[in-house]
Image 1 (spheres, rainbow, N blue to C red):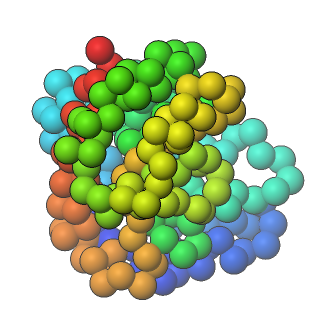
Image 2: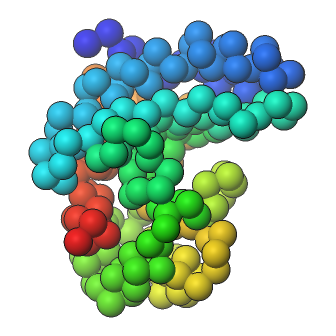
Image 3: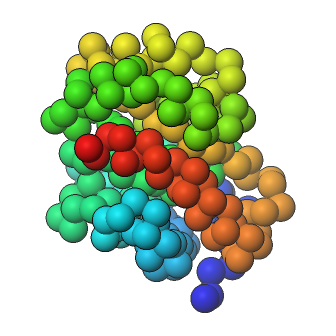
Length: 205
């Protein structure tokens, strides 16, 4: 495995002005690392969720003016696309790495999934450590710990608001030493995905 983690210069990509400049740096510096992560974790993740999982790397193809503020890879059971399905993500903003189980607004059956989680909130609390974080919008950096968030209200919003989302996982600050150790980071990602796998299974019933 050649993955050597994420370094300071990877996060500095997001300080480049202009769509072309930033996209060129993302493609050169970060996307090869996403490929290495995907190849390292896909087999284990497939065994956790009893589904073959395929790697997708964000292309940011719809952008024509504004450069992306973050970038990510996704692992999903669907080979053709991931946005309409529950999926796992690893990605970067300029100040942290995020590791998510993601349910974004394009999910056609998010109302049903949200209700399953509402009916089984104990499974979330019993499987997921309280220091894991939840985001209700993948476009924003903000996330709140499972310990402090109103989980019931968050899931109701995810169910009832068309554009609402639900992402659960971990944030790792850009200056955390684990990010520069590729082997340790891969294990950290695998452990996070393993922890979140029971929730994925609930949503895939």
